[in-house]
Image (cartoon, rainbow, N blue to C red):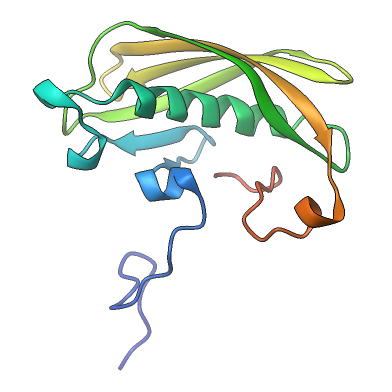
Length: 152
């Protein structure tokens, strides 16, 4: 039997390592986070759940900020503000773009936009992130975020 291709992991695909992988989030070629809205992401009325939208923006901003973290540190969200502009519907593909507004010695601030691939603005966000020094336990976790990777 030939080996499975990257597009077809075969009968026993690996378990997702992170929460965002469980949601179906992936990184695109520019390092933005992308999600196609499907049934698991919906609340009533067939629209994307606000918590999923907040998670996508928080994750995208956290990933961007983690790339500016001091050596041997990871980031945690200290504050998150999300403004919902319009619903996201099943079948739409959402793209989270971010910009770092401040990267200091202890904290960072980022802003994010969530748009459809057609360019419609779904939500905006801002977040404050705190740099936390790794311990032996967090440094060796296989599921911890690696900021040197292009995606989540």
